[in-house]
Length: 190
Image (cartoon, rainbow, N blue to C red):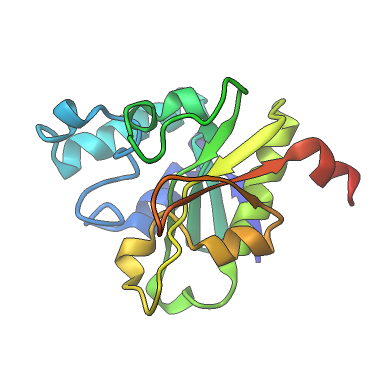
């Protein structure tokens, strides 16, 4: 397996992974980037175009996993300010004034789910963020009480974040911890 930042030359691979439905219901990983009022007026094609513009602008919105050359997994990662919806979330609002990078979303091809790919994506996303100056990386996974439908775990599972070295920093909902990793500690631990 290889994991690479999604640069302009990898757009077609990301589009292949997301498929005609844009990963999930035409989202194209734009849900967290677009304010709620605007989100209601967007469709899959518009979301695809927005993400394509981000990638083509040389901004790197995440990392992409490949198995035998095939794109099989995605993890969004960027400075928290890029994800405008987080600022207005009652449950996921900032817990302090520290500048953080956020990991709000994953998409793994169905046949590759349940194989630990999310943990590998998390580790690479942290490495990517740290190389760009991130001191803290934050995630907003679910911690379900029982079996969880894969589609609703697009934010990741708390157990995956824990395996990648994240710890719980806050919790405003029984099933939604805010988890953090301090990059300096992670890098120094290697």
